[in-house]
Image 1 (cartoon, rainbow, N blue to C red):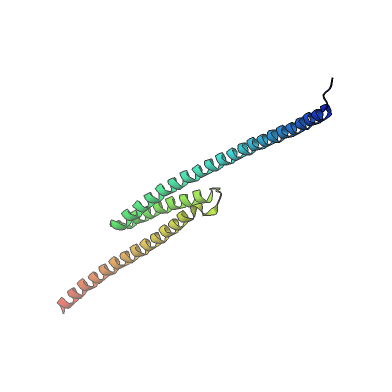
Image 2 (tube, rainbow, N blue to C red; image 1 turned 90 degrees about the horizontal axis):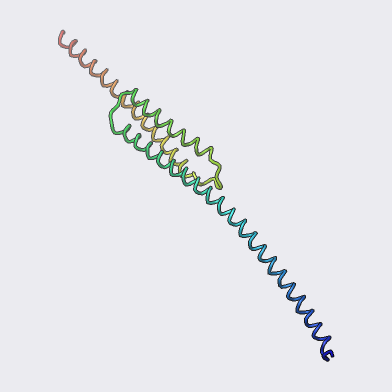
Length: 163
């Protein structure tokens, strides 16, 4: 014997099976999409993290190099040196500065402004070097002129004493 609502029950069971199947397919597709998007997100985060660590390491290295340059400029400025020593110090500072500029130029980074501060610091160091060179040249000229003046005074005293 069949119940009176057999057709309704079969239709309801079929409707339930279809809706349940569609729900399972949607859940499966959503889960697959979520896992795929998560995997892509993780790979992007890992690459960004590696790039940021690389940039941070380079910035730290550049900072230590600029600190070394600052110490050398301080030593150059505060101690009287011969012209040869002065040129040697300036050459050493310039070589360190050029190495940093080349390192910055060879760095492929996400944005161009990550090393903008360091470029400005290197420009300031270059201008400080030029000022120190000008000062040193003027100092040498002053010493030379002072020696000439002393020789003229001595000669004048010798000539004045003979007449």
